Amino acid sequence: MAPASLVNPAAGTDHAGDPVAPNAGLWNIANLLTMTRLVLVPGFVLLLVHGDGHDPKWRSFAWAAFAIAMITDLFDGELARRYGLVTDFGKIADPIADKAIMGAALVGLSALGDLPWWVTAVILFRELGITLMRFWVIRHGVIPASRGGKLKTLTQGIAVGMYILVLTGPLASTRAWLMALAVLLTVATGFDYVRQAVVLRRAGLAAEREAAQEPAGSPQPAASSGASAADGAATGGPATGGPGAEGPEQGV
View 1 (cartoon, rainbow, N blue to C red):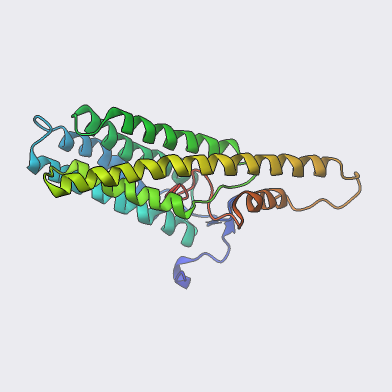
View 2: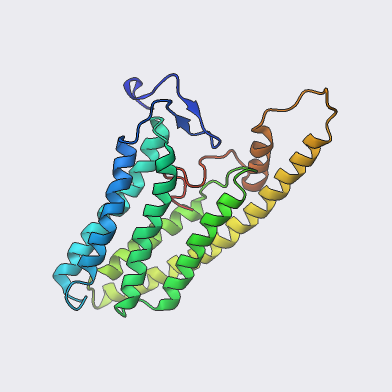
C-alpha cells in the first residue's frame, strides 16, 4: 500500500489503468532510475570490451554495471505505477532502456565470440517484435505481462549475467543450459503473446462494429469498455499495465 504522503488523491489513470499524477514531473524517482539505466549502457559496453574483452577483472566490472541496470528495471516501473509517477518520458524511455541494456549485452557477447549469434538474433527479434505488436493493438486493449514472460525475463537476465562473467567448469555448463532455457521461454512466450494480440484485436474490432451499429440516440458504453472486454478475452483477466509504460514490459 502506498504511503499517503506519496499518493496524490487527485491523480487519475491512463488508458492502461496506471495512476497518473497531474503534476508528475520529469525529475521523479522512477524516471531517474530509467535515466540511470540509459547512462549505464555505454559504460557497460566499454567495460565489456575493454582490452581484448576477456579480462576477468573488467568483465566483473561489466557484470556489476549490468546487474545495477537489471535492478533499476525491477523498481522504476513499480514505483511509477504505485505512486502515480507515470509520465510520457517514462513510457518512451523505459522500454528503450530495457532493450538497450539487454541488446548491448547480447550483441557484445556475440561479437566477442562468447555467445552464438543465432541466440542473440532470436532474442532480439522476439523482444522488438513483441514491443511493436503491443503498440499495434494498444487501441483495442492491453496485453499484460504473463507469468511465463516474467520467468523468461528473469532467466534471460541471469543467463546473460553469467555469460558476462568469465566462468569455467560446471558453472560454464550451467549457464549454457540456462541460456537454452531462456531461448525456449523466449520463443514460447512470444507465440503466446502473438495469440493474445490476435484475439484482442478481433475482440476490439468486433466491439467497435457493435458500437457503430448502435442507434444514434442510444446510450454509449464507456470508452474503455471495449478495451477492457477485449483484454479480458485475450488474457482471462484485467489489464495490469500498458505497452511502453514505465515497467509494464518487464516480464513480457
